[in-house]
Image (cartoon, rainbow, N blue to C red; front, side, top):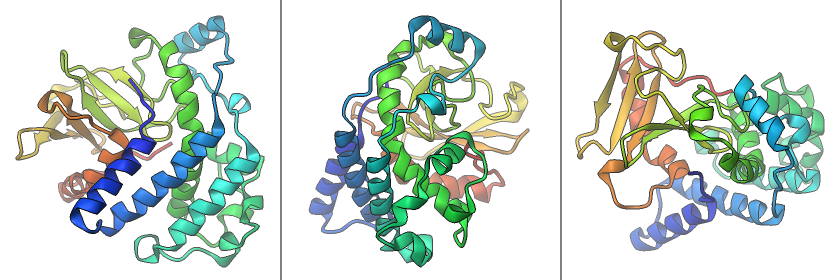
Length: 283
């Protein structure tokens, strides 16, 4: 079940940096990012599950994610402060992300993160020009995801226990509606769980079905294992040509921090692309 892992990731990377003397550039960036996110999460405080049980049951039955934007409890001042810190961090790594417009690096850049902008990002609608102008869509989406993740994750932590395992077998997140970008095989019976790309919520999904196009034809679904005992897998769908990185928890006794595994497994992304597969578009 979903856990608050941000602080653990920061500590693990800090320990790795101390042991190895330095971190690869992307891990160095990610360590700093989790430091920002952990402080934001700490300042958010407790998110109460304000949705009533009858509404939760009804939404799950109808396939409606539990959190609508109108119910997304977010401290606007804290979000803008986090946004400014995240932009400043991205700006330190132009070799990874490219240059960021000067207007977004200004001390008052938080004014661009309006409620309208937050809702557009949350619902997958076009961003306001004041926010999106002069910057690639991928980069501004990454900045917004990094900014909003602590708030979404807090909601996931508050609500995920309300989602019964058999009440949600859909290919999008039961908390925020985001798409999965990682999966795992759990220890007991090898059931497959999906992990939300936005809030890190986890839920069980059919193992023999593509979670993107729902293809269940076994002749067009297959997977590749790594050469180190099968801890990592690449699930491939020949119908929509997507891939899904998967971690087999039966292959380790160590604690696995799923958000960090997104970074540790970037080589799997390269392997999948070389074979002609692509990641699913994150919603």
